[in-house]
Amino acid sequence: MPAGTLYRGREGMWSWVAHRVTGVLIFFFLFVHVLDTALVRVSPEAYDEVVATYKTPIVALLEYGLVAAILFHALNGLRVIAVDFWSKGPRYQKQMLWTVVGIWVVLMAGSLYPVLGHAARELFGS
Picture 1 (cartoon, rainbow, N blue to C red):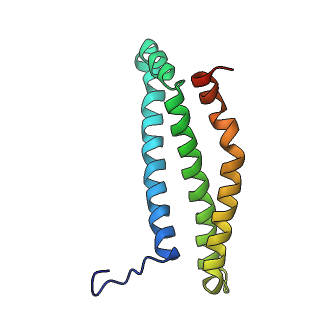
Picture 2: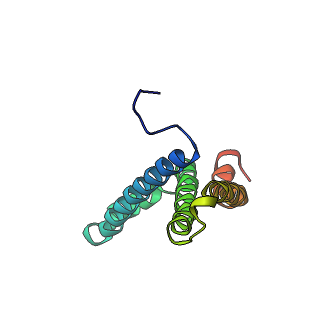
């Protein structure tokens, strides 16, 4: 650890980093989504080609990553609100973070088959 740094590599720092990274990833997804949706007015044929590329197994994996990013960002955002606006929030922020991570893992495990099932069928047959 560099001398003089305030960062200790604990849970709070990593949740802060993950919240920023997921926010940036969601922003870029929305930017691309707006662009490809606007493409329908410019060239419907080009739009159809772009949408066809979204039906690949690789994109299904990226969609799972998008679900993971949105879900973590939303749950962690609720935790940040609780820490900021609940008088006992700062005292319980570590427990709330691990609760968020636990809920996130359970929900991501539950969404594994619905989101990636299509990709598995495409790759390995039905």
